[in-house]
Image (tube, rainbow, N blue to C red; front, side, top):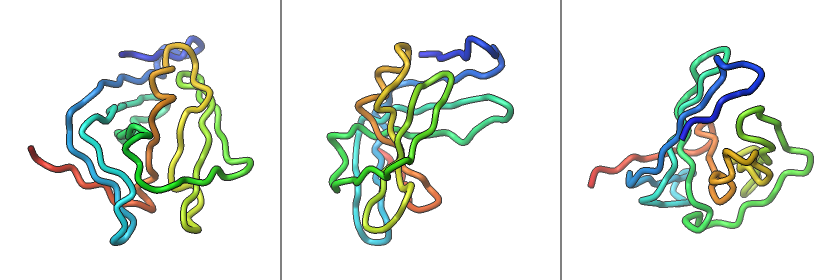
Length: 122
């Protein structure tokens, strides 16, 4: 699926569903594990890091919404940040996605500055 910024055709994202096996950890704590991520690549003013969105049903810990922690993306919609165990902005999700990105509403992405992601081979 391709998402395009209507005001800037040079700002776009391409995402796809995958069967990649992924684990998300903070230290020794397993936060999430999935075989069904969405992999998103975005280009705007720069090429952003690839983001792996994990189905919310595959997140094992209870995330706590950070009050006031939200951002607006012209191609995906409104994202809210989440905290866990004192780690602010550990993750984000599109609770109010734009129509073309509505599939992302059931997924959460983790900030890899705070969490470790392991890609496992089949």
